[in-house]
Length: 346
Image (cartoon, rainbow, N blue to C red):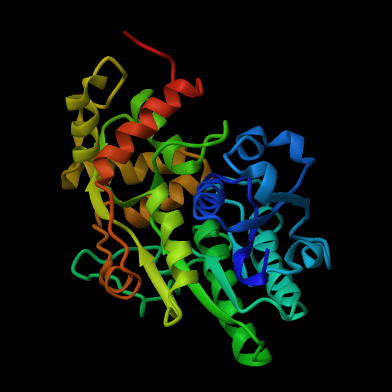
């Protein structure tokens, strides 16, 4: 295969990355995927159609210098998806910031040493856009999260610092490749692997009685297949540049609960008490202090505010069309049941 047909995907076993690998193989690209264990540990990747012929899994670690050099040889594009996506951790610096920031710089450094690499696609997040939405504002690629820290929404902070570091790297080093960032919102839909991703874990919690009531919260959602396609379009579109918000639609918690209920899922412990008014919001802010630290911080910075994302740029410049997120969410629930993350209830 020629370099133009070979793509390196870091963190290939991840929820979104697995969809990227699948689509790349379907489009007849050759894939060099980095993983943390032996390839036999990832049967959902090795069993993909054409994986035997066009997928190579290479062991690499975000914090090991030079770890990605071998995986990039002969690749024209690097898609850097590897980064922790968890909300509550014991040590935010060690568990979130270091792998996100140092890992991104390690990947960019390896790419700079690999002459065949012409473009790097970085999986960022809307967490790098804002960590406290303004209900009156439609967020665009011009917006940056300036408020997060290791103590305030540390996941948001890690994603922000990693993306900023990537752009600073490009400015300082002027490498022989271009950089494009994809900033997805909550990625949902079926999972190729058995692990539970954070977005679908939230949906499971809503269905399992974890939430005492319907809160004044909304989220942007995007289908995993669409987010994967966005990465490939960013690679295949020569004019692609800068950042692209990848979010199909926002749903309020009450609409999400109503969707689940109307889809015959009211046999689960869906919240019934409406706490989305001012009094409920005040109560939930008080109760947020009883939650794990970072969950509580997220609630206090988001409840009572509506987030709105513009997806105009990604549609116009990359030609991405979005699947209805309602369909993706129901598919995610079916997947939760299939993978035993949610008990089957008749």
